[in-house]
Every structure is written in structure tokens, then in C-alpha cells.
Image 1 (tube, rainbow, N blue to C red):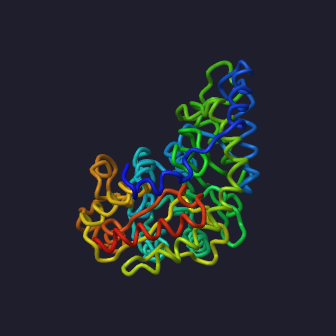
Image 2: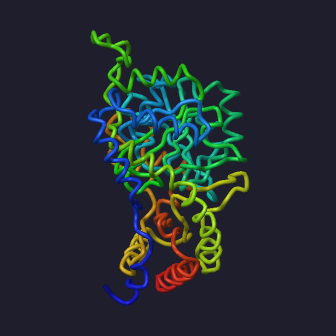
Image 3: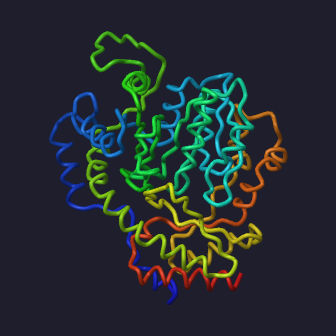
Length: 388
């Protein structure tokens, strides 16, 4: 490791864990029942996660992609329907709809927050639209006021992709208090993790009960005669994952508070670098858990941006290129794709096209570092940007 990389070798690691997780795993083991129908860890985690996020109910599932798929199915998404998704997002947002046979309709995002553009969403509505999926990019809420109005006016429900938004608040309201279904991920890099896992929050009992059936092969909790009441799959979370997530949830608020302290400082320092433009904070996003520290370098070529990220990684920083526009991945076109060509979608999504080429993000563990490390990170970014 060279001297520059050594500077960042003491950044906090991820995942973070301790005796709480160990205790939980042993507790799950000692139950002697390791799946959710016989144990108590999943049920306890669901109650705790729902309460923490202000939801009526939570359902723990196998992963975040399955959480989205299940949420969309409960919203009535299926063959012959459409789901509006931001063009700039991780591809699970679109593939969850496509796996159900629905067409994923990409729309552009806001140039400052990188969240779904409300005007573009409204323009994309058709009689076949069954859901609108705002993605809370990097922990920053999409404009939930405008989207809620659009949903009410159109009758099309919102399904929040909250994979980055554990503990987030919009105008003081938690994710589960906003009146729509929301899906979370607990994949290894997320703000809470058990390696894999997911959860869906529900604003009412009826949608939860339908989701429970569908996530358990259509069977009720008490079924002993194989009466499968709905179609579905096995999306059940195991007891060991839930025990770890209960400990991770207890850590969440403290980690979010630290990131909320560090993120404005790092954003200010990055904004002072010529050519660097950090993701903007809407003041209505009253708690941002900062899944990423994101910034753009407008005008840089994609190849140069990629080289810049490689240089940051070489210095010991957990840096990444931004998500590729979903329509620029072959997987997007495999099934239930829209009728437009890549070029036609790109013409509709100029902001996404720019972000696709010029955006960089740093893993949220950087924001758990010291105040001094924020200055050191900004200095490293300034150096590689100057060289680029």
C-alpha cells in the first residue's frame, strides 16, 4: 500500500458488528427453530422495524429486490401494466417490475437531488400505469409532496424504493408515515445489513396480510393442508438474519447522527473544489441517512471519470462510479422492455445521461470517520480531479 492509500486505511470498516450481533445469533440458534414460522426473531424484528419507521406493519423478506417485487405485486402490478421508474437507479428497481411481466418505463431525474423528476413522471402516465416508484437516492427523499399529489390526482399508487433510506425523514415524517408501501434492502453495503435481506413497510393491515401470503407460497401461518390461497414464492427471511438485523437496527440512529454531522462538512469541502458539484439537499428532507456521498464533475468524459475513481480507490478510498442508466444495461432489454430504443430513452433522459458519465460516490462508511478525515478525503478528491 502506498503512502496515499495508507492515509485512509483507518477509515471505519463495514459492516460494523459486535457482541450484540453475536448474542442475537446464539439466541436464534438456541431456539431450536430456525425459520420464521417456528421462531420469534423475524416476528420481533418486523415489529421493531415497523415501529422505528412509523409503519402499521413490516414484512421481512429474503432481499431488497424481492421486497420491491412483492410490494409491486401487492399494488396490482403484473402483465399488461406499466411501472414508472427513475432512469438513474440500481437496476433492481426496474427488474422487480419486469419480473412480474410489467413494462418498466424510465423517466429522468432531478439534476440536483438525483431523484425522480415529477414533471417527467406525470408526462409518462398512461392508462396502463399501475405504480410510480420513487427511489430515495443515497438516502435523500424524492419530492414526496409533489408525488403524493400526483398519486392522488391520477389514482396511481406510489411504491417507495427505500433501499437507501433507513431512518430517513421527510418534513419530520418517517418513511412508514407517508401513506404508501416502501421497500428496503439489507444487502451487505446497506445502512443496516445481515449480508442479504429486505423488508416491506405497509400503511394498512390488508396489504400486509396479502403480502404475507404471497411471500410464503400463498400459505397462511396456520395452514396444515396445503391450501395455497394466492400465487407467490418463498421470500421468507430466516431467524439468523433477523437476529443480526435487530442488533443492526439498534445501531442505526447513532450512525445516522454521525453521518448527518459529517456529510454537510464533506459536501462543503467538495463544493470548494473547482469542477465538483455535490448532490444537493432539499431542506424538506429533515433526516438524510446518507447511504452515499455523491458528487458530479460536469463535463468530464466517462472514461476519465472511471480513471478518477480508480485513482481514489488506489489511495484507499471506497469510491465507485455512479449507477449506469438502467436502459444502458443488456438485462433491462431481456423481458418486458418499453417500445422505445436506447437512443430514444436517452433523449428523454438528459440528466440521467450526464450523471451516467460524470458522477462519483463514496461509501457511507467514509461519513463515519473523523472530522479530520473529511478534510483528508476532500484533499484527495481535489488532487485527482486536478490531475484529471
